[in-house]
Image (cartoon, rainbow, N blue to C red; front, top):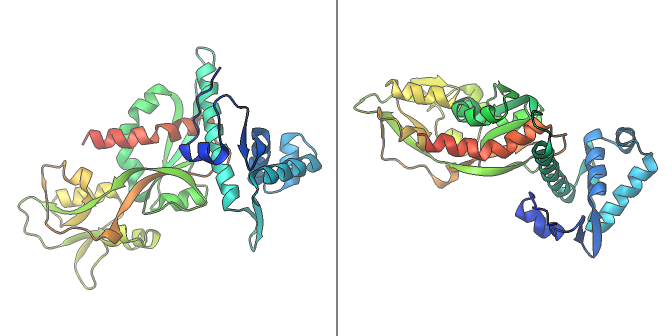
Length: 312
C-alpha cells in the first residue's frame, strides 16, 4: 500500500524518497530511517553516551549507526567547533528531515488513536514584536480541534531569539531570512506601508522603543526607528503600534494587512525600500524533541496566519 509523504519536496529530491520504500537512497546507499533517528537522538543528547542510554543501546552501536549514516549520505554530519561538537550544514539538513518525519508520525499517531484520545499538553508560542498576540484570535479553530492543548504566549521582542534560547516551542518570526540553525518555513510576506489617522495633521512619529530596536536591528524594523532629536511615541508591539496610529498619536509604518483594513487610517504615499522587505516565518528547533501538541501547532501555523489575513 502506498504511503503519503509528509516530507517537504526538497527532501523527496534529497533522499530519493519513494512512497513504497522503507528507506531512502543517496549516493547508491540506502539511508535507514532508524539511523537518522539515532543521529537525531545524539544531537539532542549532546553526545553518544547519553544518546545510547536514552536509546537503550551501547555507545559502540550508536557510533556504528552514525558512521553508516555518513557513508550513506556521503557527507560529514558532525564537526568540532570552539563551542563543542555541532551538526554540519548536511547534518542540519538531516535533522530537518528527521523533524518532518517526527511530525508526520505524530499526526499518524493522532489519526490512529482510539476515539476519545486527544492531543494535549502545553505549547509555548513566541512572536516577533508581539505578533503571536496579534494573531491570537485566529488560533480559535486550532484550539477547538485540540481542547486538551494549553497555550502560553511568551512575551518576546524577537521570536528567533526566543526559539534559539528555548524560551518557546514555536515562533512566528518577522525576518528576511531564517537562521540556518532553525527549522521552519516562510508563510506570508510582511509588507509595510506608512499610515496616519485619516484627516490627522500630526507630524509626530510612532516608533519602536530602544529595546525593540536592540532586539531587531533589521531594515524592516528600522523603518520605525526614532529620528535623531525628534519627539516621538515609543511602542514595543505591533498591536500597540497600530492602536497608537489609529488614535491619532502619530504616523508609522504598519503591516499593510492591518493598516489597509482599518477605516480610521489612510495610507501615505511613501514606499518602503527593497532592503526593508521581510516575511513571516514559522520557526522551531529541529534538534529538540517535538511533542504531539507542538507538532500539531506547527502544522496549523500557516492556516493561522492565512486566517488572520483573510479576516482583515
